[in-house]
Length: 172
Image 1 (cartoon, one colour):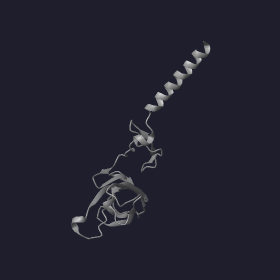
Image 2 (cartoon, rainbow, N blue to C red):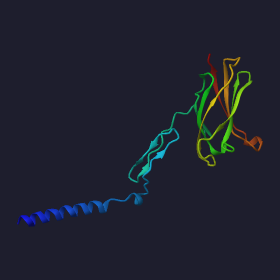
Image 3 (cartoon, one colour):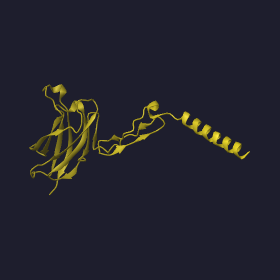
Image 4 (cartoon, helix red, strand yellow):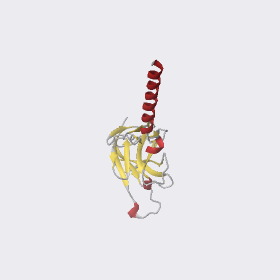
């Protein structure tokens, strides 16, 4: 009698485990991948939700946020000194050969510095591509100025021109 009861218990356990695993979908069935997704800020996110989709990357607060370019640093009217870190993301169409020009001008329009900013990822896309650069400049004669982020326009056609200006204040 004891052997029959023990055999029935083992059989029920095996049956329950079999049913449990038969109802589970494999990663391939729900389209999962096992690796984590790397975000532009260097963090990574894992899978979430019933379909095993990746969680979204965190979006930093943008100082300038339009369809073509987002500028995270510097914020408008920030007190800056040399060198300054420029950080943001721009659509692939903003770049040409993986870069676009940025210049710093004082309140009189005098150019203090100019440099190409490079894409930190695949730029031949319509998606936003991160950029980060350090811009050095001499001490200006005015207390304010602007950073000018220009869409690279190798065609020279005016209809392809675009720019975004971020006002800045110069520190000691």
